[in-house]
Length: 310
Image (cartoon, rainbow, N blue to C red; front, side, top):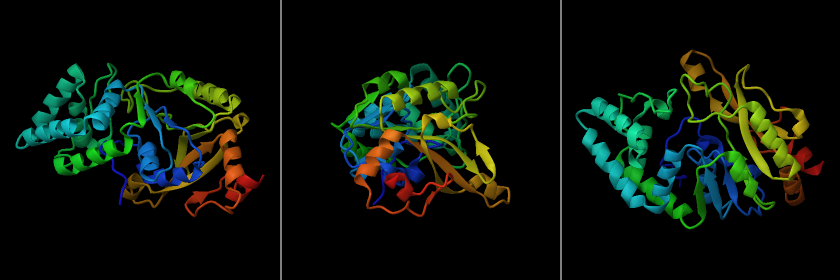
């Protein structure tokens, strides 16, 4: 059994989602993802029964239109993808360019799904005008239609009738979060959202996210934040202010593919931050746990026992 994932997305938390779920309390009202992207954490939570209701949001409006199609009209979007996939055969490169131009004009969800399946390393890129400008991976034709349809139908079954899908500023949608909800945030990493060749349709400044986090802390919101990380001795992004009072934990994400290609054996670690309100919820219900699972590191002399028994 595996979690279905119809939308390929570089930077997705798909590979560590099950580890992030280990910080979920048992009494979640709604799981809220303000920077949903491929919604890897929401899909994992739905698959493993960690939450009953979901709110996925992303400022990238075409992406959220694609999510609406997947959830509400799975067969329609699967058939549209199948048609594009078949039509490309024999003229893949020129067809990709044609679909990319058409998507930048009309923003149709099936075009975006095709581009995500075919582009290099599932790595989205936008130019200064906000147009999708990533090149195709000419070594492959993209995910086969039967496999894509299977995941689309499975995701629709997981989320239909219990997910809210929006495309708005994350600060606006966070105003409706309730005490029983859990917010999972995976904003664009620092250093990957420059104007020249952005991985995201919109970036988030560290000062802005820090101010938002302070607001959430002051409101007693339970949240988990993925924000920075490191590979070997190289750290990506500035750390968050200690004044926010967040518990900082590192999750081992596996070997760095790029470092391996360069002949180095380096392990990547993803940082997650837990709000004080979430720690208190976990402390109240998880006192029987003694320590973090093996994949969790403790960079700040923080053990799971210390976290919940403090």
